[in-house]
Amino acid sequence: MSFIRKWLRADIQAIKAYHVPPAEDMIKLDAMESPFALPDELIGQYLAYLADAQLNRYPNPGAEELNKTLRDLMSIPKEFGVLLGNGSDELIQLLALACEADDTILSVEPSFVMYGMIAKFTHLNYQGVALTQDYQLDLDKMLAAINTHTPKLIFIAYPNNPTGNTFDRKSIETIISSTKAMVVLDEAYYAYAGDSFMGDIEKYPNLVVLRTVSKIGFAGLRLGLLIAAEETVAELDKLRLPYNINTLTQVSANFLLTEKDEINRNAAIIIEQRQILSEALTNIEALQVYPSQANFILFKAPQAQALFDYLKANGILIKNLSSAPKLADCLRVTVGDHAQNQQFLQIVKRFYHEQ
Ligand SMILES: *Cc1c(COP(=O)(O)O)cnc(C)c1O
Image (cartoon, rainbow, N blue to C red; front, side, top):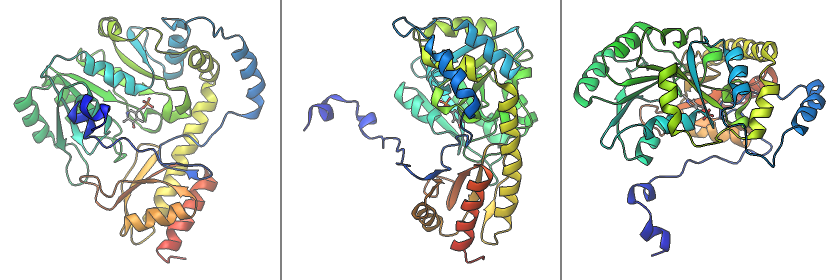
């Protein structure tokens, strides 16, 4: 037996590593990235800005300028605190680290897989409460599970990944006010949704909102944020590793994220493309398309695996969820730019002999 096999925790050995498929030269519609690159006319200015970064020094520990940039970009009220993470994944982990041994993390299923993974990494219990058949919150089931398991943390992705929908607001409010848990509304897709819980932080002391710049065009920066009552942020900040936001990210974000109009314009294009793509998929007889408030669309497809393979053979990578629990025959496609979406559609139609 190898050294690491003898040494490593059995539950970690049993995990199948998160597989990121190679995507070289493919049209990448699998990971909710933005299709829009930095505009050419900004590149020169950006490089000049980067040249001032002092890479022999540690990053600015409090990242105050970046904090202000994000507050402006997302219109975060000044009375709320903001905690920055190396992606919102890091902030999910930080919240798990704030829990005690034997605490329970509760979420819904299907949802973002990292909630369960991070619970496992940090030796916490995890409870997944099934969504209804059409991927809505099952409020009775949620309240029963909260009663039985008294979770310490509840994660609700809003809109949800991988289903794309938002849940009933009233149900979420009921959950927040009927638990002692911290309720984390994960708004990774806020830019594509018609609603947000950020304004509710004032009303509910146990409410925390997570956001990220990954899904609005800057996945490569690795930058997420937690928005909550100022005192909540001040306490959680003790768990943050020093200098977690590196200098290149801080400098880049301070330059790129001040382009608020450009970012909003790109989000509007994606919302428009989502509508076009969703209608076109709905018109394909074989498919069942789920409503989306995010920059991706979940759809149920007969012969999902074969369609996924056919797309891949034709240079388009999407996400195959067909073997995941409660997602039988389901595929998830990220909304790309017009040309990418049309290319994707053409191949799907060809697969089902619809053209
Ligand atoms: C993509 C995603 C994240 C992770 O965001 P990063 O900031 O890139 O770590 C978190 N939550 C949900 C629901 C997501 O879909």
